[in-house]
Image (cartoon, rainbow, N blue to C red; front, top):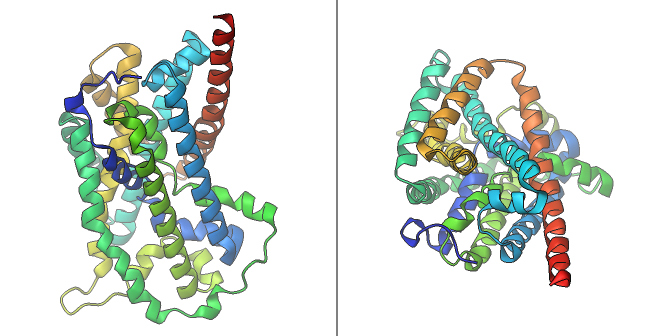
Length: 365
């Protein structure tokens, strides 16, 4: 199956590792431990492993789908499988979902800045400047977005070593008891671990932009595996540093961990951490927004810059409404549940119907 994208606009297969990883590691890793501790206490590490396994299964299924689909464009596959009208409706849902992912990251990062750095900074101004930066990155095309994802990983992952600094203050007794939840309870708690794993589904849209796309599958799996290992490591360090009661009450446990780091030339290390985290936040916003704008471009037959500007203005308008609003939690839950339906449920249904349709066509032939 030939790609509809010219080779000069495509990326090397190994860069998929950075796209997957940069899109998963973002604002979620700053506070996912709290939700896991509330639902599973010290057994949250099991939910992380199960969530990581589910992501790798879905990546396998996505590559399987493209291997057997008549097109490398996801928006065309939905119409082929479900028909024109239902397919178009599903494409609209995916556009809204991808745009909502960008909005969610933007609101959460603004919350971090207001709490930890600058309480009085105008949220609307910050959001507008950040979206303007992301628009500028988009003008360079998907290869520029990929380059940012690559450097965001390379330039920020040195901060993992902060966890080793924290370990000298850890107490192993905080990690126990373990294995005090039933299997069904662990499965129910997987939803709290899955939130840090979302983002890989943008692969559905940028698949045609990968050279020899099927050869990139191993890099996609490696990227998801690396995210799983990172989340597992951060969670284990957290439950060994905080008591169970403390972790349940700490809103941003990862940032609180970094605040204990003291250097002769830096007193408030967490300020540096939050500022550097912007490098990871940008691809968290840029990649889903690019995916939404590309699907909108294909659906409405307009230029991608037009759809990008329209979606950015929509996000900015929603962002101004949600800053400091308690209603954002309800919206956040809607995005979570939409992710489970569109990423897990619908993709599996799409593959099943696709294979049945291919068998039916083969029999008729």
